[in-house]
Image 1: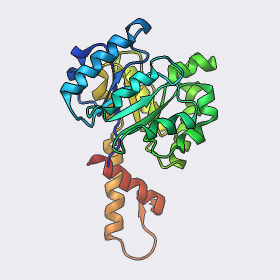
Image 2 (image 1 turned 30 degrees about the vertical axis):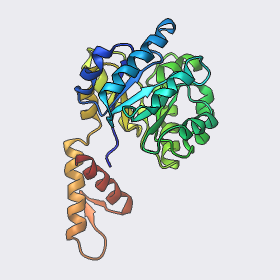
Image 3 (image 1 turned 90 degrees about the vertical axis):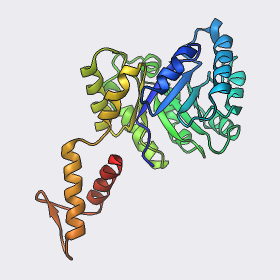
Image 4 (image 1 turned 120 degrees about the vertical axis):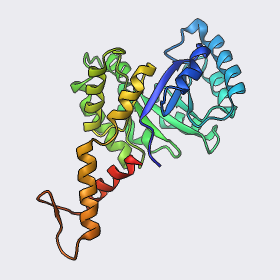
Length: 269
């Protein structure tokens, strides 16, 4: 199954935006009870979300970002997971494998679980976190990580962290991780450049903060025309080739090349 590439955040107290977010084309919509909601509005937002989820029913696109395990809202937020309308949970400030394992045990088997990596402590413990049985995917809270690490730029200085997320995801047989948000809502060129940058480092998806970002993100994670044409040439050469070495575009086709070509074609659907 093709992994989701676009994850759209929506403030959990803005019920009038929920259906619009689902109509945006985003692969997943994250109804957010954490950063998007002020402390004095947490309970109201949870109640708002509860009422909407009860009416909306089951939907595989709907995730909820609950508040972290060390907050006073965590346990009450987690009770929302019992509703059929919640397809998955995102845990912010995920730092301990034990917390994720406990959370996983409280979810239905069909529900997904995302670990949002936002701190230095989380990166140091990344292998243990990624190895949690039943974890669905890692996501990168890049701006919170910058704040925690004292880093002032979320692009090149964070590339070693992106690489680490990709390596640990692959080691744990998880889908390629989800990259952090781009704050520029009306700057499509910047967003496209950020998506391209993330993709080059092996990230497989991106967090969005506005519906206008969704199409650019989804397009950016699809194979380019040249990549698609190359992949088809490789697979055609394999299908039509005889025994012995096969070359495409002057380069030897070996097993990793074939696997890459198949992965590209699979993304095209």
